[in-house]
Length: 404
Image 1 (cartoon, rainbow, N blue to C red):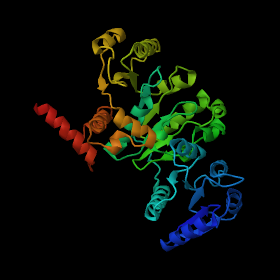
Image 2: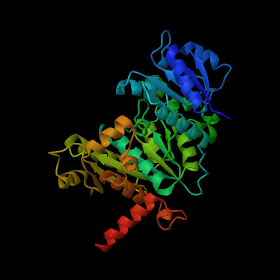
Image 3: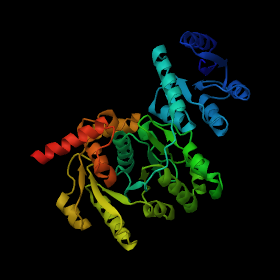
């Protein structure tokens, strides 16, 4: 049965041309000449995907997209925004409104068809993770200092684990609002923690939580931060604990992208983690923040948790000497991430983490190796029945190092 496409555009000529081209590629195309007409149509029709123009009178595409996402009965429908407003600002605005993809006009027909098919496949093939047979490996990535790369490391670690073991991994944005986890994977914010915050804690179950997560081709499932400050008030520590307990029961790995604080809600996440990665930059303020974090963990009696220190070299020159940082922290640094703005900036702007975009590059190799090192001992000890390319690369590197 042909996929049903709702095309929303106020330009009649473009509407007719696009509809004709898509029809030739086998789609059943329905049209609406405005955002208001589209919302009216959605009361009676249920398309498989929506193509939504941005520049429309009375109600622009951003507003129409937000209203579609506000209706829980329509929230599952993928939305591609088509616009001449080709800027990072408008792309972010589109994702925040709930769009799944954003294409600049004029666009190539084959590219548009490919994007439509990719979203349709993704919406059809999202599998629910099987209940985990053993407790999840829950890894909190943490820093009391902003700009340290917590979200970057969280997204790359989650994707690295998913690719390494070919299994779903939960990436949880613990920031109360305007978190970055979803953007690092180029994911729309049509589902976030906000949906869970509207419910009573006792009503939240596995099905509800999984429906609130965003899917990615790498098998990472993201629970994104709410886009608006007022929505954060609904995210109580009790709610957070309930959701994390559910995720730990159905995912083998749960990665927590932590906020830069030690609030009650943050402590809920840290308490449920069995590994904490403390991120530090080679400067005084960051080192002091890491020192405070480590002292706090000692006070909280986190001796049963594995705590690793990662030095993220976030600027090119004149950082503190590594030995001095270790002396200030009274702890050894476990891993140094080299300065690599050319790799990290595209990850933020275009949602392409190095571990996925360039897995055999310097950063891709580092994050693949980190994923293996932080994997469950039970997995690392046994050769998987079906080995992934990532697993083979990591094992080959381990063998090569032992031979030196």
